[in-house]
Length: 192
Image 1: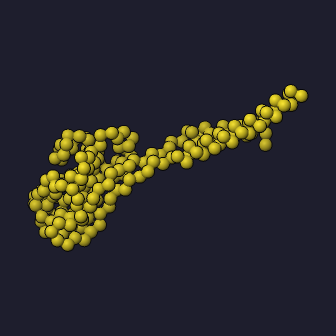
Image 2: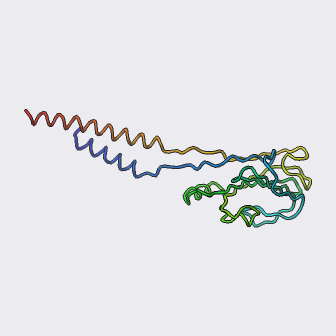
Image 3: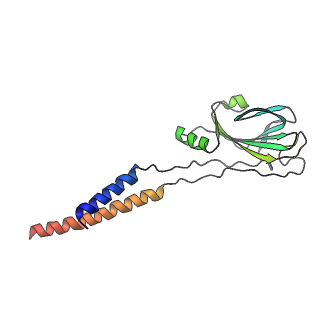
């Protein structure tokens, strides 16, 4: 294989790989389930009409908001017929617009001002999931009765893309090694 061919293939590979976007996954906090809610109760209504972020419908039933941390809350809504909606609320103070868009693509809703939902006047991301709660008004999650249901929690994701960097460095290292041997051999031939 000629020096030009090796150089061309190596340069093309390096430029192609450097031009690709490395994926960055956003690590989300862990939320407890409305089936077994954790944290302190921020507010609780045993009955009434309530809203759910991302949906314009009105819901009738009980609603309880739990404080998990200074940045995370869960809202546990339980309708009169036992259909529950869990909303995970995450106060986002340092996420980039790109990270927010990644999470919106995964089903999160961006809420620019949490004060409209009874939270701090900061930006939040919220995500809904369904669960089965007991059918009586006043029942949310695992409090006060047997509960059947499923909740989907978002697991934290690790940063990806490191293998691409290692691959690029491997290719550049291999090309540099081959070129170094070629130039050394060319220099020896010229000095003779």
